[in-house]
Length: 265
Image (cartoon, rainbow, N blue to C red; front, top):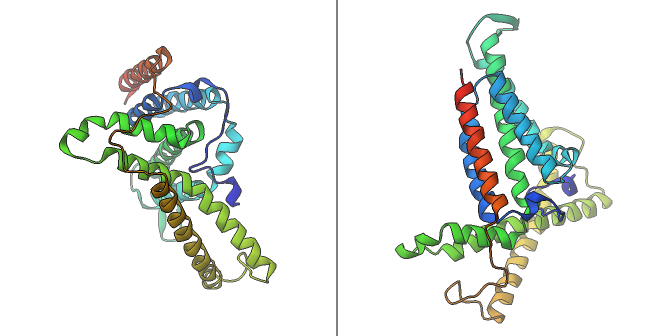
């Protein structure tokens, strides 16, 4: 299960999305998060879904692989859907389950909100899947570069975010190894009541935290041994270059925003 989690993982491939400038990807995702909220009817959500599928296919990342990696999030999306279904009192009453009434407006709103949530996570997941962590760091540092004038430690903040993203799959792999080791010794994480499963997870946390602190210490020592002193005066091996495809991607997103605004109810 841990091996299927895609958060923080980089998937090497040759696609137009992989070749885009990381700054363009970050701006693209930021604008996409904003324009998603323009959708409020069937036509706008259909257009938004088609556009998202176009991005996924352009990245050469298999949709089945993406959905399999988002299974934990899908459970949260389903929870959001049922929350709206049972507690939104709008429109006509469709049916009644016990003391709860299901309204037409609740079902529609639940579908729209869940779909919006799913599309947001799908597109933002492509950032780490198609961009190496070091490129994400360079992109964040370049975009927030003007903040250096007001003494904001942009390089250090970008480095912290990059290391956090990089260590997510590492910690997940470590968790998987510890779980398999404890299962080989008789631990059971899948059966019993919820309380029993929580008790079974507690012994898993101690070695995981020990391993995480050990890795953090080793990384700090390695950076100090190599003379790391922050971003001041540092040069870059990979220089970011803005291409026509980056401009076209943002223009395409601007056109999508205009069309969505025109199709709003």
